[in-house]
Image 1 (tube, rainbow, N blue to C red):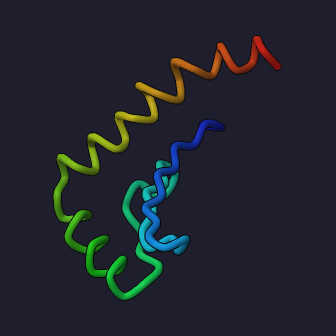
Image 2 (cartoon, rainbow, N blue to C red; image 1 turned 135 degrees about the vertical axis):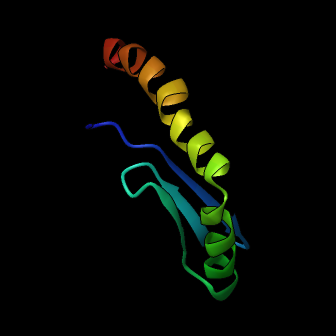
Length: 69
């Protein structure tokens, strides 16, 4: 539960949409980002794939990162 997967989408140095595994959905920060977040959140397979990234990427690498630290 302490591990969090965040994927941000930026354009021109401005973050317009973000997926946060703790929230479990996309959040938009601009007008375009809000519209995209609404559409992407309707796609349950996209949400499931993003949540799977937490297990695939974060949980497999956390042991390696803690060993190095």
